[in-house]
Amino acid sequence: MKIIKITAAMLVAALIISVLCGCGEKRSDYMNNNCGKDGVKELLQESPELKDQGFTEKTCYNITPDDFGGIKLYKSSENAHTIIKHPNYTYMDLDRSDKPGVISAVLCDLDGQGRYEDVLFTYANGTTKEYGIGVYNAIFGYSSSVFKSYGEMYLYLVKQQAEEGMPDVFSVLTVTVTEFKNNPADLGCIATGTAGVVTIADKTPVFSPDNQSSVLISELKYDGISRIIMSTVDKTENYTQKEDIDKITAFLQNIEVEETAEAPSAESVNYIFAIVYEDGSVSYAYYNDGGFYKLHGEGWKKIKGECQLPF
Image 1 (tube, rainbow, N blue to C red):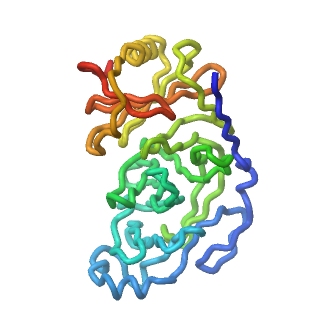
Image 2 (cartoon, helix red, strand yellow):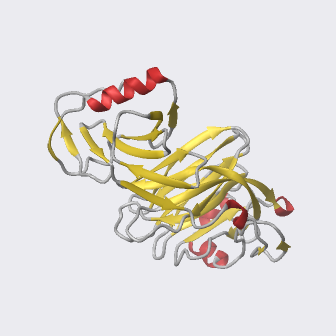
Image 3 (tube, rainbow, N blue to C red):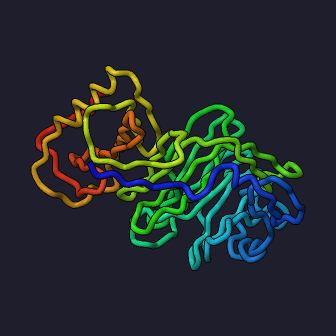
């Protein structure tokens, strides 16, 4: 059985460090969240209509993380809305959650072409008590959900240092969040634990809830399964009961394919199955309601006849 091991390069404890926030005040023990005024005046001159959306010279802050190149993130301290601006393009909404809104952001490469211009981000909506992970697709220019749930949990993304040629993996940490001077653009975060990982596969990010410090990607097998995590672009379901696991494995085993196919249309829904085994390894299978199926690392296959999901 072929197994790929991707090990995190840092422990959660190493992330609890002293940093200097861009808004000027030293905050010991907090993880770095940039906050400043660079580019704000130019942004508002170029897009004066932003004033009606809560962005003024007083309320607008540049919260762009380090190493984002020419991509900029701006957040309103009035309503916590965050916008993204690529060089030579106008702004677009990244997230419109209520306070505190966006908590962290990292660049990712959805199409696997080495162009790190897409953005994964974590957010929390204080009004609806919703928290989760979102993704901004730079090619299509929209944000969508990778994972969301409800409660009081705040999340933070950190890119793992994977070996060359291995897929990108992002650790998802649980954190406490402080709004300095009641400003949701000026956040400080302290790591409290791990929530799982996000992997990018076939232009789609998937969140796998897990408390392990490494991810083992293995070939698909149907015995020794402890749980199956099914993710779409807007929800994640965790199946641990034997009856549910048997239904899903029977569904996957009975899929018949007839030919290699081009990648399915982006308009069709991708279902990503993270199949977690008792030894801690994970297999990924992908199903598309346009009639396509694939295994992790392989090409898309055309499904013979109709093949309905078991739920």
